[in-house]
Image 1: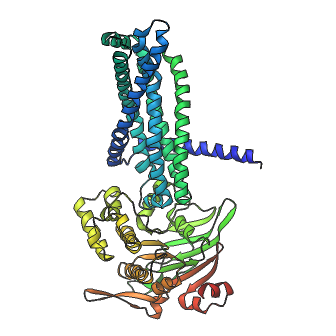
Image 2 (image 1 turned 90 degrees about the vertical axis):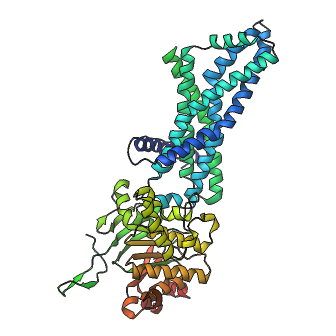
Image 3 (image 1 turned 60 degrees about the vertical axis):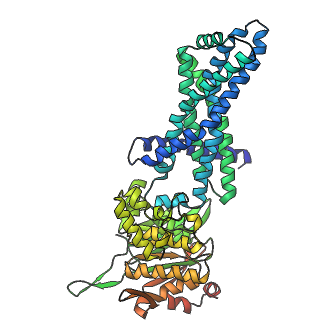
Length: 256
Length: 283
């Protein structure tokens, strides 16, 4: 077989394994046994653990957005509309995508490294030998935490981003505070809020399932763990951008 | 029921003799990975309270046998029976039940890094069997006492030496009182004194708790030690002493060579083997 065919075969098998994992996660989510302690622990680790990085990213993104767009809007004498631009951009797209990317970098890599280490030291096999299904014990809690915490983190990133934009608008662009906030509200429609809320659910699911998939199939000792971690971050980051595009396309058709 | 290749006899209450059913049996099991044959037509049976020592060079398929028994891998051909139940065709859900009577000591211990010694040992009792905390604590104390590590309850695995990790792994495997224990290179990489300590735990479990064992190793000294010693109670004390001939016969050796059984017999027969490969292995 040519290397190209080999590569394609490996890629198809990889996708098949990933889809099988997703199916197993869905089945395990709705059937017993549940590991409540692990679920709570993962909500804490993925939710609270990612909060700082998401807040910082959201703040600076909102601020730089106001700074850059202020210059462009000036050319049309539209500086007072800076709030509208910041809010619409943050809520509809940047908030979910940046939160997804931060999750990919922090959570996706962490999951892949942790599960990868467990896989190469036989701890996953030990779990199965002790009567525990690793999907239920390790994967489901992480996926649930990613699925439900990503929207919460996104809303926080959006709020902090709009706040960052307000600081720049008031201090640097000399836009009146009331004008900025009125513009923020005017720039948002209900459909935008739906779009900004639906996307993070999918992004959280994708990032955590990719991290788990890469971690569980880790082979080859510590080098393998390194490869799995890198692969998880790269794959999850690309997936975040791709899923964002396709979801946006679909939601525009459905909502607008 | 499996067609055991080895059947022993035991006394029935009426005084008559009856064959003992094997607790574990592999029948004509074969397995290949990526086109490479790992096991070919492997058959053996393990009787209750007996020991099966699987010897072989690295990569000969020894550890694969244990993973097949646990259902972590499935054979390409052949049948596997655990306590009379065919497991090679079972789903994961049913396998979880079968694993309830199997304990496994992995290479390097495979202790959970994030849990303390007590949590590792009591994992199944607490997380899977949901026993009351006091009951779990009592059993954890008991098994850690058995392996001489009662003072290590709150230590983390990273704070233990290699030998202590293996002993904790043995304690974890025996915590639910399984009928069959599988040891995967339990003494590899340990110094001789620590290895003997682990060997003694295996002998004590087999003779005092009536656990059937499959010991995978390439450490001949440890294999012969377990096969030729027995544990006896002397009042409150437990002593490990050289076994008599009948007891030593209960330990059978299998030698794997490139996935095929090259030898099967007891310790004396292994020592007397004339096959050049076995002689090289023993030398």
